[in-house]
Image (cartoon, rainbow, N blue to C red; front, side, top):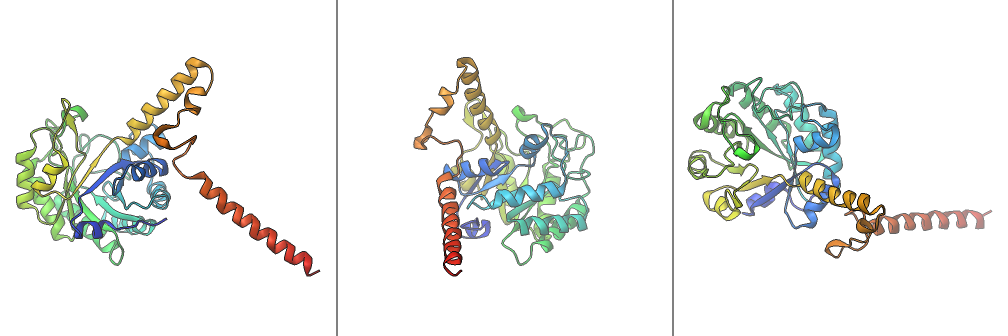
Length: 320
């Protein structure tokens, strides 16, 4: 399955991109069914799904493997949270080239220091951030790696600090470098060839001033990271983001939503000592299903192959 439109096509057409974070083929399919126009593979949610702990325990081979399967399960363009791409220009080049070949339509490359796929929530707490020159060179290597493909590079910097309090703001982190440095790095990312930039930790209530500076000083397409809600209200609406000058946004809901649904089903079944509750819950007019993929389509395809094989055997028997 291939994406109907690329991220580039959508941006050039002026289409605002809302890409919820996903972690497998099912979550990507559900995002598509709900009407979104893109999805983003969350390295953290994928880590939880694979290992149950956000500590960077899977490697690039596993990440590329997951990307290929997710990208081939949806018609949405898939953005990949590429962490620091491997940390060195040659590693970034190799990994981004392979992610693009696997079907990624955009890859973010950030400035965190990590050994391999760093998906934990240190946010630089233990190791800090790479210097801006190395990071810009990594971005340049990523741009070189995806030349001639439909994939775009997102120059992402996490160095600002701050962020939404409900997810663990890091303003007191001694490694954080502030907004001025983040803007400087984002501009270096653009100079290195990235067409999209993302400054992390601007996603919090009262972020308008920071967002205004970013839009005024950083050229190109701008990605607002992980929109949140505070005290029952969105920190920013999608309309506000667009009016300010942002072009893409992401958010986390897939794993929380999946956990809520599973807990509801399993609790009721356990309490009732049967499966009536989950089996008879035909939600959203989807019928009696246990997968968001259309099983009947695959069954019909398999039947067509069975019929073809039968025809061949009958012809072989008739020729004897």
